[in-house]
Image 1 (cartoon, rainbow, N blue to C red):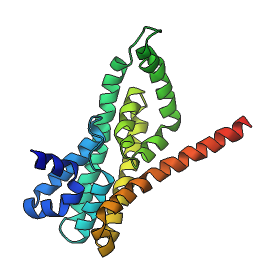
Image 2: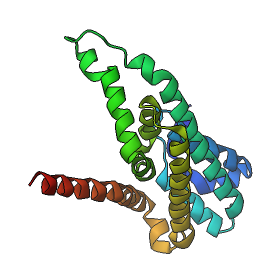
Image 3: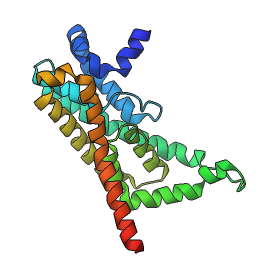
Image 4: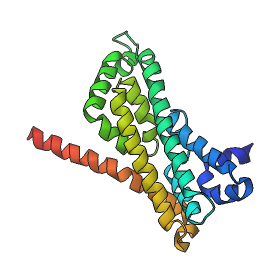
Length: 219
């Protein structure tokens, strides 16, 4: 059981061996992990960027069909976010129902916060949905909060697809281009850490840009 859990949580580092052992079944496993990581708020710890990078490297080596791989990853990413949005839309209003003004739950989980979330995602939601794709942990919660905040689904759906195409294209493309470089293969754990850092940079830059804009506006 421990071996299965380790395999599921760290498929990115075991991907080559699993592909050799299980052949076509690897496509289903990759789909399931990406879908769960983007579609279920309880599984933000699953590999994302590094798994896509490793899969791209195997596709470049001929172990995986690149067109099939990209198609499955896009389907998993888009459908995962759509399901997460639907869960947030269904569960959010039931969760944010505290009415006791003196309680911590009222301050944290109330409909006023949902209204603010709705306003935020209507104004900045597209940018949040796209950038959130590249930030581990965050990408698992963005669609849920978008659903809980009642972001218009047509708007969410458009940026969901845009973000999925960008995420899969960049991560798989980087793996396809650089994943089989000897120094990358020999130091994959460091590369995976680097991928996470690089993934956070767009959101960090956007945050700093918005802060500068806010300071300038206040001045």
